[in-house]
Length: 458
Image 1 (cartoon, rainbow, N blue to C red):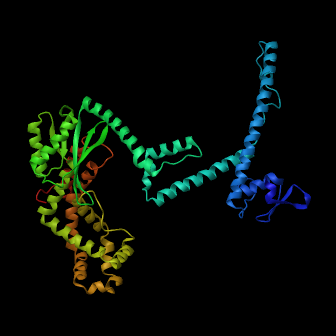
Image 2: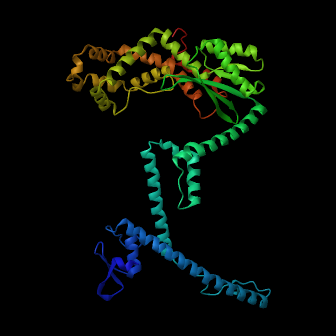
Image 3: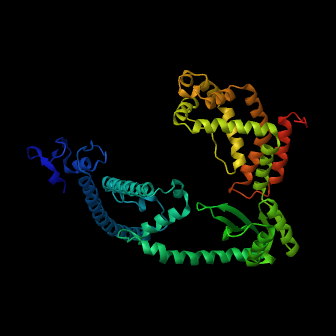
């Protein structure tokens, strides 16, 4: 098959010229096929061979290799059978003798590497097919804007494994199949898994957790989840947009969920620490004597940070000034570009789980970039910009260059960052937090004391 792409030089089959790159090779047509297949096996690859031709050479060589291997195996099997008969005859004649010479015949079973060159072609074919396959999978991710971390999900590996087992010719599911047929099957499968969790709840109990949020349509949604050592499962969600979340209504809503799970299975109900939820939790404990209401640890810490900002004057003033700086810069494209030149593309705003944690993490970023910010506001780039003549611009510049502002910022961070660290721990999905929340709070208190040199007034 290689001759259709080659020219026999001087009627000498040991010298072959490539029709694509016009190079002449010695070693015959076998070596020339490695040149076309670009295997880098003792020959320079062809840089002008089309991809379809290269793959054709790989496929046909792989098939030829498989046929040769089957023939060689059949010959080896017959030879092995003859050898076994000879061994049995020799063994029966020489009982008691156990030397290796009795069992080994020179020249037999010594060519285990037969066809090693063709095996390399097989490997090259597999490598090429895998590259094309992976590229197509990646292209699907890019085209559909699928998050890259989906590759880490175990279901992704299972899916590809089953596709590989099916082999070529798999007809993918249609839009209707995924939307209706397999969705119904998955719902049924999920409900069967839920039964396993319910069995666990009856054995050792569980915790009901409520989580309120607002969707893109400004609807108020309350999700309910059930946690046990087996894991956390989503139970249901309720649209609370149509009624006011007074204590009585919240208690009624929680009571329905407890009834659904089974009062005998519920150890505690975890909610936010807002006044209405706290009152509803106490009402629920009056009605259901076997369970406890527990405030959410993350929300409690968030409320502590909120108290810092609202009730401590130095915190309120410092955070307000920091917000003024970040808002002024990030509302002007030219200033964003200027800022990134001085901060080496680092941003001033650090997103966090809660609004109040975000405020203190932003203070932390400002503190780290203090030198870059001060350099920016005294640089020629700032002085030659139009912002230096504006009142808001001069006010922001004055704040950045004020040493008292940075001193107060350090004061705020000494008090808040130990609590932010605990908030990150308790709001993580990595592991249950009940086991270490109390000791971490104690450590945070000790750290705050140490930061202010144990001076209670500070």
